[in-house]
Image 1: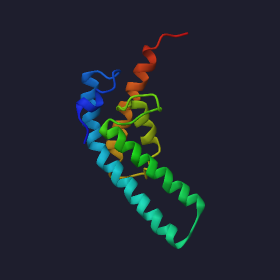
Image 2: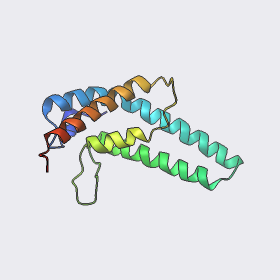
Image 3: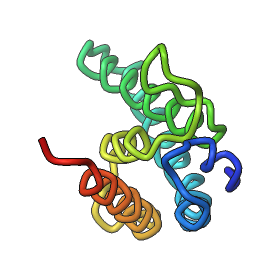
Image 4: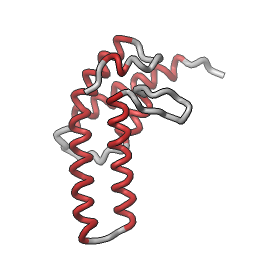
Length: 132
């Protein structure tokens, strides 16, 4: 579970926004991890019976998404090799987009609420940029 200090490690996120994100993140993060772990385990079991290179690639993608979510939760995510480790709204939104979220998932509401907040933060940041 993340904290306001972890979210505020990003200098572009103010205290009020950090508090909203923390609440939504802590509600959604356990479900996102549970969902990914369930899918990865099921795919690994299927892979044992039916070797398939496409399925191996999909498992690897899901494992990467789970790793990125963990880094975001700890505030150690690095968007590029030169950036400091911190929570990143764009990175979080990108990871959420890669979730294998089935329709009607019990975690859908909390994940989509988090995605909406992150999208609003990104939209506000884009609107604040000077136009060229």
